[in-house]
Image (tube, rainbow, N blue to C red; front, top):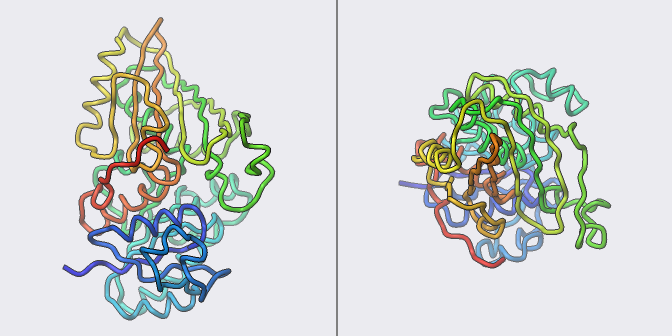
Length: 352
C-alpha cells in the first residue's frame, strides 16, 4: 500500500523538526511538502542539519506551492505546527481547495487554533478573533488515549503542559477517587517556548536556573478543564503553576489532590495501569519517573503515591514529542485507520 502524502505547516520550528524526523521513519506517511513562508526554496537540512541524511535534497515550499500540489493525489494528511492564529488561515485555505477539488484531506492541528469548540473562548484566551470559526466543529481535541472513537474528520492535539496534566487528571476523575480540586506544579524545557529568541530562553538566563511564570493564570488552564470535562463528564478545579527549567526538552508535572475515600498507593498504581492497559505509549510504574526516561521518547511515564489522604501523580513526557509532534502523529494514524502507535514505538536514547 502506498504511503499517504503529508504536508507539514510551520516547517521550521522545533515541533516541525520532530514531525519531519518522525515522518522520515513512518511506514504509512511520507513527506510531500514542508511549508515555510520564510525559508521557501531553501534546503530542509539548512534549518535542521541533523535531518540532512533523511532529507538530502528536499526543500521547504511556500503555502501556495503546497496547495497547488494537492491535486496530485486524492488523499492527504496535513499536520500543522504553525503558531496559533497563523495555523487556521492555512488550514482554511487547504480545506477550501480540497473540497472544491474532491480531494480527501485529514488535518491534525498542533497549534491552539482548533482546541476550543467555542470561538469566543479562543478569542478570550488568545486576544484575537478566530481566523476560521466555521471549521471548529470539524475538529476533535483530546489526548488520543482519552478519546476512543473520533467522529470528526480532523483532530487537534492539546498543548504539551495540558497533555502532561490530563494524562494524570482524567483517570483520577474517571475513577472518582479524588475531590477533583487539583494542584499542579510542572517544569518544562526551553524548547517549549519555541525557536524564537526570548529573554527567558537565552542561555545565560535559563542555564542553572528555575523560575515560575504565569502562576495560576497560564492559558493551558481553561484547556485542561474543558478537555477533562469532555473526557469524563466531571468538572474539575485547577490550580496550575508552570516553571521554566534549565534543560532543553521534557516536562515533569506533579499533580496533587485529596482522596474522597481510602485508597493505597499500590491500589491507585494498579488502577492507573488498568486505565492505560491498552495504550502503547503510556506506561505506569511503581516509582516516580525520571525526565531522562522519556526525553527523545514518544511515551509518557506516570506514577502514583498516596499518603495522609493526599494523592500525588507524577507524569513525565517529551514536550516536543508526546506533548506535540508524536501526539499529532497519533491522531494522523487514527484518522487514516492505522494503530495509534504506528511509527512511534521506537525506543528512545538513554542518558540524554
